[in-house]
Amino acid sequence: MNILAVGAHPDDIEISCAGTLSKLKQAGHHIVLCHACKGDKGHYTIPPEELTEIRRKEAQEAGAVIGSEVISLGFGDGEIIAENQENRMTFIDLVRYARPDIVITHAPNDYMPDHIAVSQLVFHATFFATLPWFKTNHPAADKVPGLYYMDNLSCLGFEPTFYVDVTDHLETKLDMLRKHQSQLAWLKEHDNVDIVDFVTTLGKTRGIQAGCAVAEGFVQHLVWTRPNAVRFPV
Image (cartoon, rainbow, N blue to C red; front, side):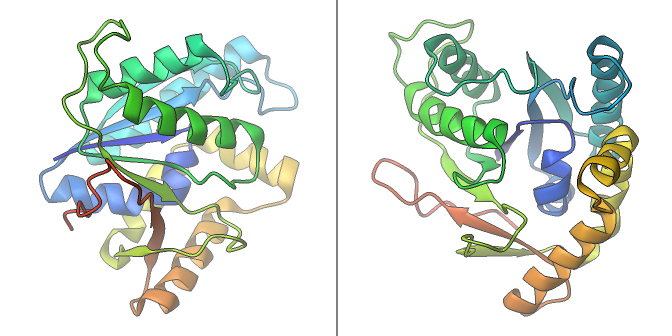
């Protein structure tokens, strides 16, 4: 299967679903990691141009841990707008490029505007990518993929409908996350969060709910025209 994971910033995917992606990759599925934004404004002192390159390298190193493809859509932080047709076309072309069976992205009620915008754009694009009269660099997709929302991190307003046991993949997930050293420092300075400890705690919490040691939780977007019987092949 082709799996496309779309996060707003470098490290979002690693925080919320890298254990599942590691498990899928190990099982032989093709993984594409995409961050929509460059991560260019998440620092107190490093200027955006320099930070963009740092975050790009960190994202590539994280993806290399599981041998996945990593791409960026190149939006500036805080500059991604869902109700913009040009932005929609960019996301449509992304879906057509990846031709996914399953797409993973942010929950619609995530905590910050870029995440919410990406969630909305992915929802639009996964349907519109199949309509041939939207012209982009790649031909129309031949099917609407399954759509899953990854954890919004707070356990508030997010009740998983699907869990993945990632007990054996926690260390790989944390290894991927630790590649984002500039992000780890930023989250500590800006939000007073040790994100590695935070992610471990959340994984154990979801594990209690799922009946295993460590889990990642998802909500499947169940609507007509979606392949609602499609599940993560793990």
